Image (cartoon, rainbow over all chains, first blue to last red; front, top):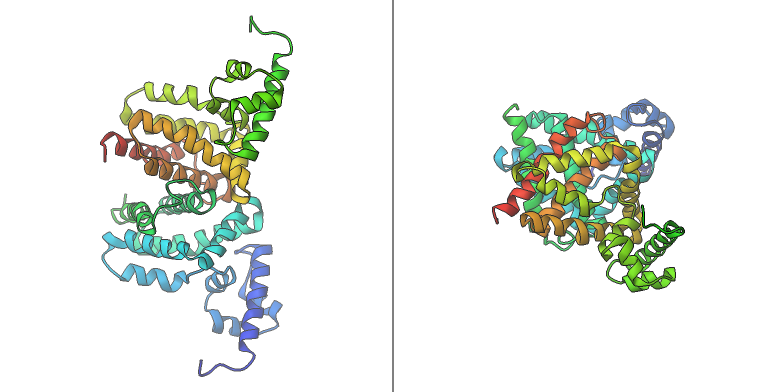
Length: 194
Length: 194
């Protein structure tokens, strides 16, 4: 925080507010760092300084409860690839078990069920940020990654929204056991090149 | 149609309208054939005559696009258990590929995302009708059946609501390949008693 100047956090929030608006109105592809900077009345270099890439401004603007640019490389490097499924499943269950961190994910899913801007946002999170990282790390194809994310979303919806038993009352450790093989299977498909 | 008396179809529709209202207000457990008959001003025997059991009135009242009481036993008997996953996956993809038959399923899922009566209805369809039938046929546990249904729902949401590629544009035969092992895995878990 040493180099932080007064007013920075207001500017950062302003940039995020403009980014949220533009991504929602124009979609991921239609939004540029330049347009975000213009909307916030700042230099594009300042947007890069605060966030890095467009992907990172985007993830910050959707209130995603983890930073996948930090967390996914840590999980990939954090143990053998044969246990990546369990590591990611543990993180997913940890995030979803916390009501505050679950809320933005549920809002995204609920929104995607009923309206186009939220659907476009959720697609962009998956297609531009999460799926490419699985592809880079393990060679997982788009179809396999999309299927795994869809399966995980379905299980979280059943547990937290629909209240389907026994998933709704299952202890978190049991949900890890359900999710880990789904993710590991996707990873293994990529690693074996099939 | 030989024994059909004039006015029957009006009465049948009235019974369904009352059933829909009561199941939605009181839930599955809180609704009786007697109460439905009372609301429609008919004898309970007539409700049994038209529909059979309470489960069957319920399924008819939610506009479920197949009759699971007919279709599931046919699928179970229709070939070897090792290929049940493929048979059910084929049916699911057939139903979801038809916009008219997909609509009530999407309405149920969308409703369940945003409000309690639809959530309760969807839970009752799964917990009272579909999951017990997998249990009867293959010994599939509730947790395994619930997980399989959640995964399938997630894939259909990704394909038809969120529009996640490449699932959204995948040909139906490819979606069968995605769903079949999920169902077969659930069936096999039950059959092996694990």
